[in-house]
Image (tube, rainbow, N blue to C red):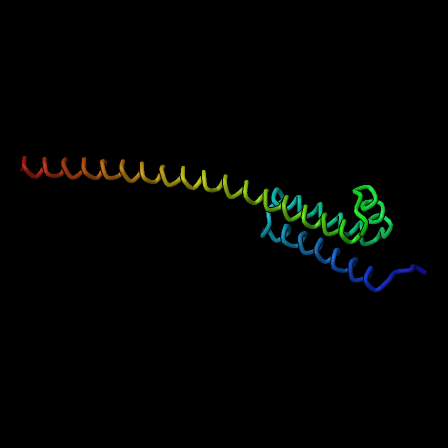
Length: 130
């Protein structure tokens, strides 16, 4: 039988629930695939370390971290930073698109005003001829 501690069982459950929740958001189109790649990657990393207990020890030794849970905390911080950077890039692109759309709307309103003004002048000219 597998030797799984209670904390490992909780870690596996939470990691799998996170992964399934991300998949649900993607399938229900509440989260686009292109924005979910980091979420999927890090949820898979957490699933890996939940099942492979010695993996966190190997990673902490490789990174030179004396306390393995601190290495997991570093991974979590790295995930948060990368996701925040991704969101900042997305927000910057959306701000540029929003600015362009506002400028296009302004130009369209100006052209519409010119067209309406031209139509009004034509109608006034027809009235004067009558």
